[in-house]
Image 1 (cartoon, rainbow, N blue to C red):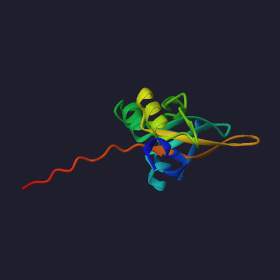
Image 2 (image 1 turned 45 degrees about the vertical axis):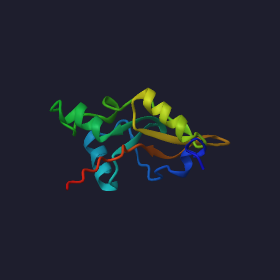
Image 3 (image 1 turned 30 degrees about the horizontal axis):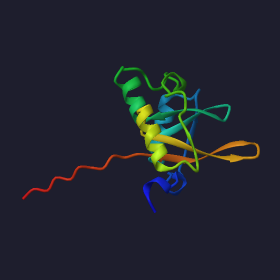
Length: 133
C-alpha cells in the first residue's frame, strides 16, 4: 500500500480531550498533564473552534509572564480550526499541514446530524539519531 492511499483514520490519535474556551489556561494545562497530551480541542457550546497546544501556552502565556490562572483559553487559542475528513489521504494531510504550518490536525467524520470529532493526526518529525564510533 503506497503512502498516497493510506487514510488518516488508520493512524489517528483517538485520545481527544476538549476544553471550553472560557476555562483558564491553568485548567487546560492541568487537563494536558493529567491525560499526558500536548494538545486540546477548544470548544464553544460543544462546537470545536480551535486547538490549544503546549507551544501556545508557552509562547502566549508563560513567555509573556502572564498568569495562567487569569488568562482564558479563548485568549490564546489557535484559530480557525484547520481540520480534515476521516478519508483524507496522508499526502493531502501533509500538504495541508505544510501550507498551514501546523503539526496537528483534527479528523472529522460525518453523522446524519453533523460532523463528529474522531481523533487527531499529529506529525512528529523523525528524530535524528547520532551514532558515535
